[in-house]
Amino acid sequence: MKTRTFFAAMSLGLLAACAQMTPLEAVQNTHVRKAAQNARTRSDHDALTKYFEDKAKEMHSKGEEQKKLLEHYEQKSYLYGRQAQDLESRTSALVRKYEEIERASIKEATAHRHMAKEAADTEGRLVDNASQTRPQHN
Image (cartoon, rainbow, N blue to C red; front, side, top):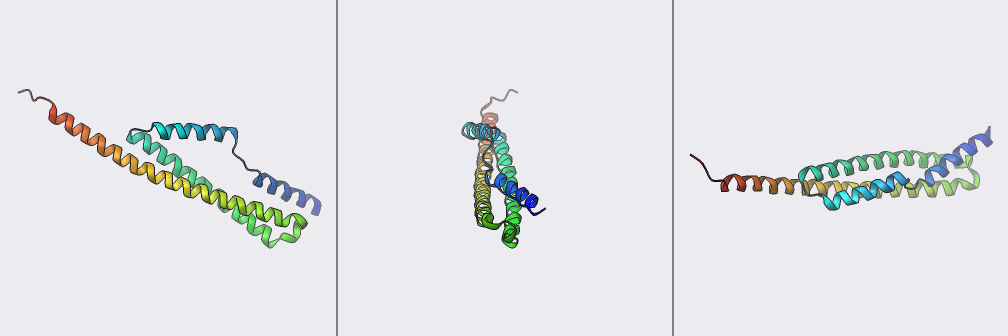
């Protein structure tokens, strides 16, 4: 029973520690980078704001999950023998990584929210100027 528990916890820890970017995430990251570079309108920036806010929420939940796992490793280190320190350090590194990505995503969302406001102001001024320069027909 102890062996089964050990291997289950070990495999879970290794999966969490090896949580790299999947090919799909890498492609999405490229698409997001291009979308951010090409964003011009308010709706473009609003979509990017939503994406980065969702990413921040996802990273927050993953970080909380890893914190619980880290707490478990710290409280029950005797269950993991020599690997306990490795599991703790890997999980701690993941927590830091997720928190860093969360902060960066929040920063990006804030920047795009600001750019969306500026784009809306610019679009509003363009509409106002266009309506003022049209000749009035009586």
